[in-house]
Image 1 (cartoon, helix red, strand yellow):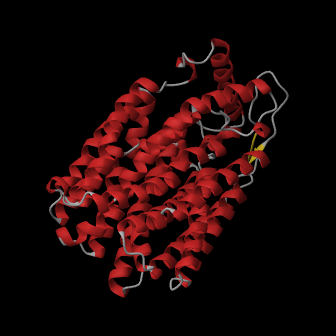
Image 2 (spheres, one colour):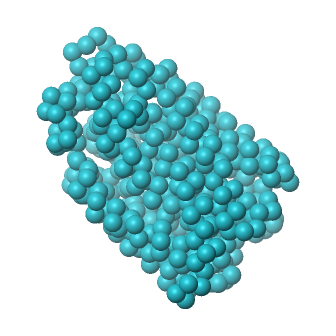
Length: 449
């Protein structure tokens, strides 16, 4: 199966090897990320029932949805460093098993405060998964391929919206009252339990790196490892630091932190509130709400892969990410402006999700360019830590604005402004050029931000 564009390779052997690696890793990692994102945002659908059951206000829901990211952020950097120390397959498997157990415990929620506690603990348990996978992909793919690789991985966000919307609506519509459980309780149980099984499978399916991959011929393992080592040496020769503290001293990493905060904050802000936005557009049944809410994610799934491939083909990062952020900001503002028209509002939200997810996919190809070694692990975790605070801030801000104004569109305007700031921060990055070091070949085309 071909996941990576043929135009990304000058050598047919590299084309064959890296597409084989992509075929082995990306579908499985994509599945785990779908489950991960679904566990984060299914509270948006659960709210449609549980708000009345436990007395949950809009502001309280926004706070509970976001407090997940406080626990997540507190443990993110230590988690990424433990992944590098103990090995990816063990640490990713551990994360998934623990968060799957806690996710199913959400069926026990009886009050706002219990909801807060379990959401916080779920964030602690899941900390490090998302940046850990981003780091793990750098063990397998050179810099020149990472934009499209990340785009495929980030399809998990889009596909979780497509699958999760319809599934969540179906569960809540058909299982409410079965076995004495409400629909939102079945939602947490059915969407949380598979994570435990996937965590166990992860330990046996993943390898810590190319040298451990018995499913690759020895010569292919050697070739990949040598290319990645050569690229690493090239970055060091160019003066890229790799000590732990380098990540915290690099201005460019902090600019990427701002970009990630903006794009991820907008993604989560829309995802958590999308079911309510769809309801406000006049859709009433749970199943129809789920189906309509999946539309922006379908558009995003297509757009982000095309933009990621174009970024890799042109070896350009900065304008692809910034332009995507500007498209997202325009889409959010358009959706708010046209809130009285369901069709136009959904078109705006679709462009908002295309821009946000495409911008994230391109942006996440850059930490491995700027930093190496322990600094890369710390830099990725730092970006994810501060960036995921956007997942706390934006749902809460939208909840406060909605409760006080009775209008969701004010929250969309706030997200548009935040995303615009992220795009401008991306343009502040220098036109840094990195020379990927190929193996026994002429120099590869330069990748520039």
